[in-house]
Amino acid sequence: MEFQKVTAIIQQDKLEAVEAGLKHLGVPGISVTKVKGYGD
Image 1 (cartoon, rainbow, N blue to C red):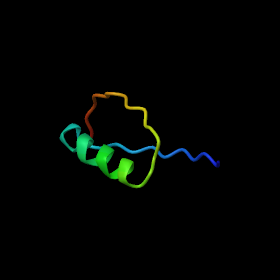
Image 2: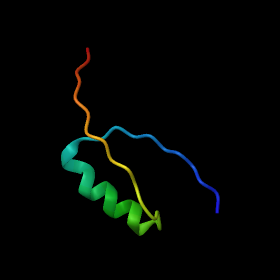
Image 3: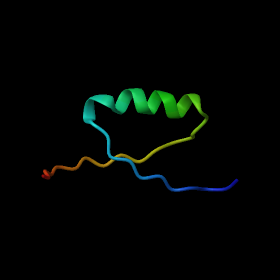
């Protein structure tokens, strides 16, 4: 099995949909970290 790292920043209200999509694709798990910030 080959591992790959993908980093994505998504809105909190989209997390469930992203998780469901990844499960549908066969991704066995994810790590989630809550972040706060702002930008221009």
